[in-house]
Image (cartoon, rainbow, N blue to C red; front, side, top):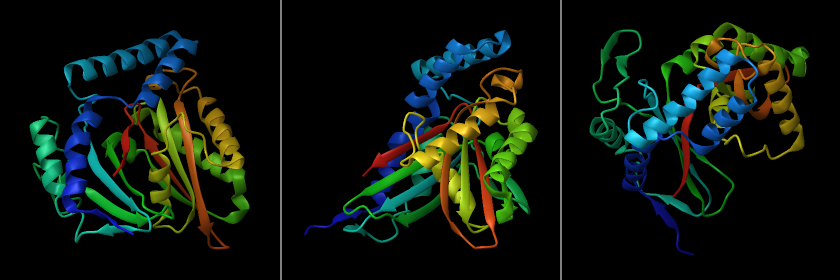
Length: 283
């Protein structure tokens, strides 16, 4: 059996191709969801906002200019299955590729040297935030890339519930977060919800949940039903597009669950803005 090899150049080349496109071309599932929301919106101000978001996406794609001035931090997740060989440090050239893509595409640099002690801009939008994980898919190598703006991340949170809070407790935590933070996250939102694992791992579940396209259903009926219930609860807030009131506060909710301690119910809510810039690349 000949093993597929993933090198640092494989990852870097993918970033050089996809970062400029992510910054300027709205993923098709997000654009289609915005159009659908616009067409059924019953509030005039919200309909105007949705129309402007659709128009903005068309201008950005045509003129190759950013969808939003906040072109975000770069999150890179490499997933590898059995039969895949990694050639040394596969992330060795990531920062070089990110700096090149952001400089050549004239994207805003949004990373500081140290969150607390030195908030000087690095000037390169690096470091990127990288991770890799094993997946039970033989011969598969997959790269997930996200450009994540500050407003939507600032609206995110982790809540450590007790098991007695149950399903309704999770719903209440999501809705509370939306009521308090959605207006600053550029709605309509895409909301990633992680439930389970541990305090340090549950945010990753929520972020990975955001990677599933809006036109791709969950793999099981139970999760599908819960996502629909969460979406209905979020949209019932009436916050709406642009937080000006309306029918669509969120375009979709994506949930990822995991095992956890018997005494815990960890919940993470990762807000994604109306410019949900992410792509999955099969290597």
